[in-house]
Length: 466
Image (cartoon, rainbow, N blue to C red; front, side, top):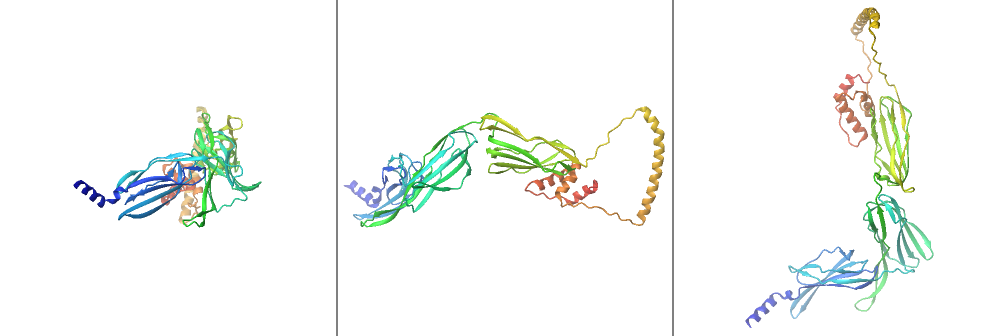
């Protein structure tokens, strides 16, 4: 009797302990593909910690809700909760037991099974979704087209709709067309075309696309009266299996291309820029083409960022030199999708004539007999040169005495491109090279560096640059 009294005391102090439980249910264990299912957790207890459920049966949770109720039975208070999660399953599955914390203890739910009883789309269905690909086997980076068709019967009514794109693991979209709508018999069809490319080798799958449609429906309330409601249903497309093959060794480009290069002029002045534009046309992985910037001895080459628009790639380059030079051919090596062979194409070389080049006087070594013959002549020339120099010195002294002002030509140091060309012949000087590199950076990059104007003016004065 004493033990019974203790037990009754414990039950009186902790009445909720006998009610703590968690049970999982589905509103339907057998559904058609596209139906929305509600997964519910029925929990009895005082305090619960709501579990974070993001997906069920590999399908995302669409929405969640909760309800709480309180019952008094024979003076005992019983609290219960119903946590609901809606999702649209795409396959049959079993939802395993989940852990839920109730009154400080971890409780386990029961497992529940779900069966998709029909996955066949009727020919006269109100809504249909379909995916097709123009190729089932592709190489890595090779473009191919995927067409999405959404069919809606003309008499089908929809309150709202939501499109859920397929998962594209291992693929990326290069281009997406604008939606096109047209009629085909009893159906209004919306067509979208995606240009895609595979990122890796293997058997890849483009998952099903999904269209959620809301339509009006009637149901009875607890009093038996009909009330209008909005019911959501999902329509799925087929999935696509794509086999992706590796490109041949030594090739990273695939497609069908053409290439050309044009220069803005045939000849330039010394240290003037020659502008060349490289253009690649064709269908393929243009985004994998790297800069065409070449190395040319004695020539400064500047390249701009590659620009891709639709099926055309362009890159601008500038060449600066103080002597004649040749721009070598620009080459493109790729796997041709038509011939299934590796192909190499290239532009023609460009010969550039540089005007105003100072030719160096060749060094001539004279024989000893010639030196003897010219020796006496040199003495006479030396004497004449001395007398002429003396006369010039006297004239200069006279001019200085009347304070003759010489008009100097000034160089605009704000014109960085002009400065860059003027300083090019003196790049061997370390001070000149520092300023030259800073000017080059300011002109051909987004960052700006501050140039020491005092140092710049000293260099201009040192080399008499005008």
